[in-house]
Length: 406
Image (cartoon, rainbow, N blue to C red; front, top):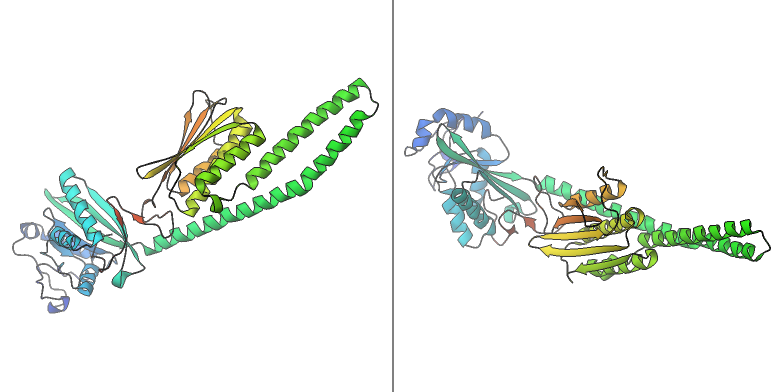
């Protein structure tokens, strides 16, 4: 194990200037001199790790770095050896127009001002790192009364690619479901509905024939049930083959869905939405299907006469509200297939589903991030969408992405 402490390297020095295994300490760094055992242990732990890691003091001066950090700094020609001012470096690069360093500097200042313990964000690499995604994590720690922080850059490219693969799979699955639903809708219209129409004609002939009063009552009851079955099948067929989302856009497609669904079920549906909802196609489709499922639940279970659909963008979140004036939420509510499906769709988008009691009825609120959401490590909801940080949205720009600003 390499026990080298790369401390106090000058701008003109390189890793090759020092004998292998030689330990170096900054002569002006009291923390370093006071805790050589801690620094030795830190070096043992971080050297050899693929992540780029630095230890900084409470003034954000670099105390120690690992081999991966040194190698990356050498590629760029950055002076980020022990003794360098990491915050000053980020501020200087940020003023030059480099977005990741500007975000890193803002995060560090927020940690100082608010005494926050951690900060992280994700950015896309450029230059030598083009095609990769990185996450920067800054975490405070306290050793024997002294304040330190670790600055770590992780390569999360594989995680982001896996998220893209999952997104592609979910998209193809939703598209496949849509194709199958349309096929079923055609079968219902071309076969089942025609058979029911023939049955209706037969009942009409039976009704006109000579029969007893008891037989007439049975025929009338059969006609009512037939009419109910036809209405239900028309509703199901409409849900399976709704207005085309790609052609109409999310808001107009939901308006047409509500209009058609209301005419077929007798449900009075009000839609209140902003004219433009700027989300990616996969998100639009998931929201649309969630609204479909919610309306189907209202029709089948709520016993409602009116329903409300609202789409409202507030700051960075889209709130989708579906409410009805039905029988409301039972005390022992269990998530059935419909509600569970809605919750899963919303969770896939990095959002959450809330279920509330109405006065009367039930209120569903799906809160969905408008931008790609950072969940745990590197989650992105929309391919090609901006990567969300907890300060700002970052894209690789003209300069090479700065060391450790993920």
